[in-house]
Length: 387
Image (tube, rainbow, N blue to C red; front, side):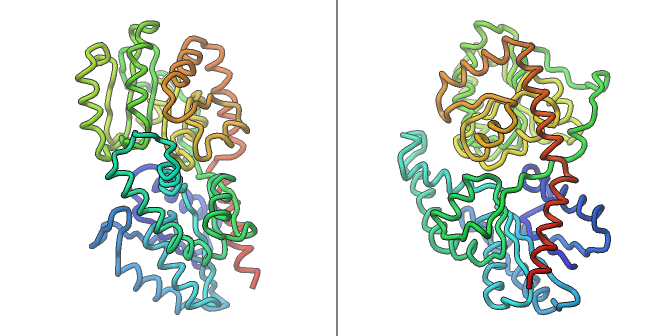
């Protein structure tokens, strides 16, 4: 079998880490398969969230015409709303018998955010300009996005909620969607030796955030509750790990205007995977106050590392928290709920240990690279054998 993975890039975090981990594990499980990653970044043209890459069109067409019954071809496009995913959908309509197609959404946070803005769920948090841009996203979702997802043989979503969105809003037949989590690299499951800790945060307790420094992540609400937490935990530290997506300057301005937290916040940019493991094991909890989210890889990594999680009740979080019992959910944008949840977890070491243990069990049962890749392999084989 020839398996073509289309993804914006294999460098970076989140989706990129998951795709690379999946490719590596499938190579181990099925060394007889030919896997070819095709990336679209850097691309010559951009339009907001959309990236155009004519070279990808040529590659997809070339692979499509080469497919035969003896050498079956599967395209797995990674990322709902990506240019390469829409191109695969287009060629699937042109060559309906030439290849099989799989779309892995890796979350639909943009669609969920646009729906939230349209329903005024976020109040005045987003400016009129930001709101207008997101409402344009809805135009894409209900036109090209809907056409795209309905063109695929199978769509892999990150949660039941996503399957509902795909079916109810975009018209995908429920029988053509399935829920699979992203794989977590093995390094996060390894036993951790405290003597390997080379990170000195200099505080106690330690709250960790891992992800993009982005307005959508709700970090403003986290900074707003930090002064009140310092009343109970004078040496508390908040460590924010992740690349800047245009919001770091705003965060720094907020910190500079709040003198009591200036020594309590640590911002860390790009770090190695080994260093990330150390941060998970150094922290007392992971906090993710996102306003919109798919399946957070940082939550999955925290589970694998045995770290309790406090996160917003969005995306896949309600489902995985209900199954794992490994953390606490809060309403997005609700500072009071966030404050109570953080105080509850930070004040009780037994609760932290209990939540962390449950998360690790859940991750070992559901999120290892081997178990996720095996399910992908079965799906690919099922598509190719069902002609």
